[in-house]
Image (cartoon, rainbow, N blue to C red):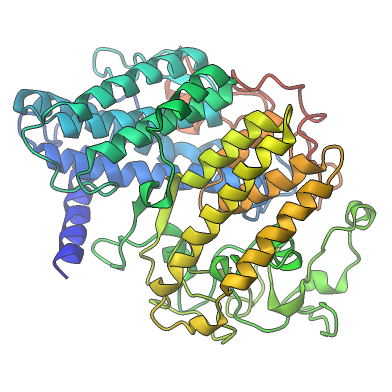
Length: 545
């Protein structure tokens, strides 16, 4: 109980600091109502920055998951899928409420010798700014937090930001290796363990080296052994279960677990892939409120609750033999690009499960979800995982040595399954006798290994990519990066729209940023490629429709 009270209190303090520092754009003058560095407590700044960093990551992670079919994208075309204004709050959280709070904290932390605080802030800043590069391309950085001296910060080249970030991570590691006068009151990631922060810093470097194709630097970190290798070292933000004043729950739980029923629709592509392969993670990812989906084999269609159950699949679905509209066994979701209205299916459609949002474990009870059900939202936002590192290592090897790549693919799957399965106990009311057995898990891994061995041509890439995407449930950032780097899986479910336009290679700049900063010129479309994305232009690459 003491830990929960401390957690909720920290979130409340963070919300107070954020409200006092809130502003609409990056380049405003200082808020006269805000605390100055000389007035504030470094822990308050750090509490606020950690929470707002997690919320910014969550939004972009969800977007990355949607365009790669891990989650459902509700737009008929890519150009209009995400408006510039959609990203305004995330942009503000990233710059104003994460990076700026951390820079202000440093004024006090340096005077007090709080090297651990500074190191945490540097890793968070590095993650945040490189995330913005990966999604938007060239963004402000060197002049970003300079108001009132610079009200229109210039943009920096993505490669320059990556280079600066690598140096910042080196500084963070040095700070974690130094003696700090005190630890933070709240370290929501590693609870005061500097060695784990160093591993996270090195693992973030590995992401940057993977994106730029720097195998030598990547493998140098591998050789050091000082990176995230086991799931108990994963870099992730853990949410609470408090619903009000403040709401500390996982954002997807807060939206999806209400007395009116589910939130976002679940991805038919992902559910079908996991269902047909007997993936042991499916009961953790998805919670079925109904045991039958209209239009599925042996189930009557229903125009009111699932209109597509009475329609003919688009030709591209017929040609590719893709699952359309209705899946067996009550898996009720939507196909990529479905922008229909919302029928009265809130207490019927499949909801997000116990992993990663701490909803309900699917024990075939088929009860309706409700406020507070399952784990109450005390889930995680995964950011850098041990399983992800294994898939990165496989990617470097797959093109030249598929045999050498296989053990890393299998290891990534095993780590993912173990992590996901550990969430069964998060739902105190679950009947875990329905959980997959050790034999089920072993058979699944053997089946994937056999399929990989038998695969020819590009199918090994497809198998690896599908398993990587499944392991990234909860954060599609690395799936979005991987898809642009490789173009796999090249057999992803197409959009319902026959001609949805070119795939999103980077997103529109936020509306506030482009309107208020003369150096941020809004893009004409979503085909601008970030600096490390050197593949052919869309729509030929990636092969998404």
